[in-house]
Image (cartoon, rainbow, N blue to C red; front, side):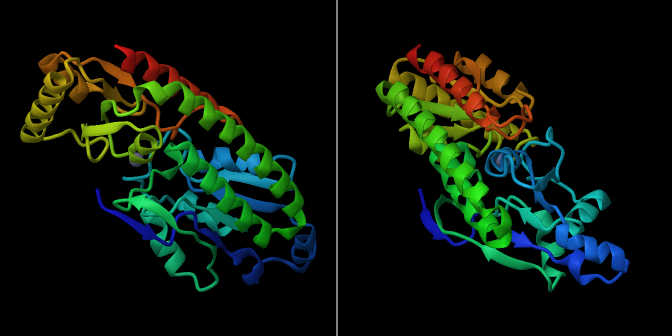
Length: 298
Ligand SMILES: [Zn+2]
């Protein structure tokens, strides 16, 4: 597997539209010194991080893509999104190609400043960094330091909250490591390319991926190849390797594979949709943990 260093993961863009445009009246401009910082997350997993990092700060949080969107691979920018971006002080994105639909928006605005970027050891430029707990911790750190720079009046709150949330995530990571340790080296089949960081964090081997692009069913040839791979893995390990579908997508391809191989379908959640609550990432990961325990002990 090709591993390389990239220098943009969590990019935080600051947009100065509100202060640069002169359409506001004098009164509104005067009021802007008391202005509540508006922070927009591109999608759900980043919004949950922001709920933790900015809890209690004088900010307004927004989410660009609706919370049931899932990954943004095929997301189309709407007029409403453009308005939300232009009325935001800070836009938090994942980077690594997850928000390709925003490239033009950011490029066409000279006021746009990239103030935070970071390196992360990525797998084939794969953007699903938050799906590993270590990756989520990494993103929280980056978002926090970006916010501290851009919105210093809330810096203390951001730093305190981030430290607390990272502590909780570290505890989660330890529980998951301890629980999954006996299954290290196990083979799994996943649904889309969301799990390489997760798998590497917990010593799991992804033998095949059912749909490279979620929502695009594999061709008959691809399906046949996956079935052959799963059959080969099953006879090699002397048991049926688990297939992991995702709650956000139809599992019909997985069902075909299950019928042809005898492998069982389970559900792993890449945490791209869910409840709008501070602990929803941690809860989803705990659910993933118990699903994995169940799937791998068979
Ligand atoms: Zn994805």
